[in-house]
Length: 77
Image (tube, rainbow, N blue to C red):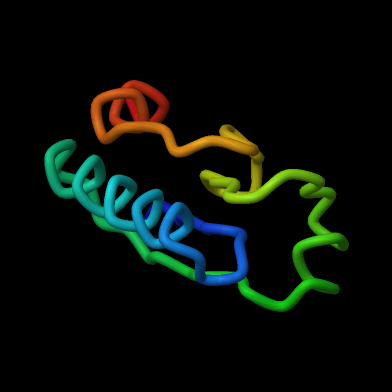
């Protein structure tokens, strides 16, 4: 199962990144777990300096922008 983590405070951009990540995972036909990390300390501990950010299986793939579903799907491939 692929672990998708969205780091951010819950702002509209963070919510959009989470929605895009879910859309990409469904389109790719993979099993996934989506985790929203909203705690500032946990975000910092993960090494995220810009939000929103997306990690796939523990590796930061996007930071400081909202990647679209197509771009995230390529990262999942």
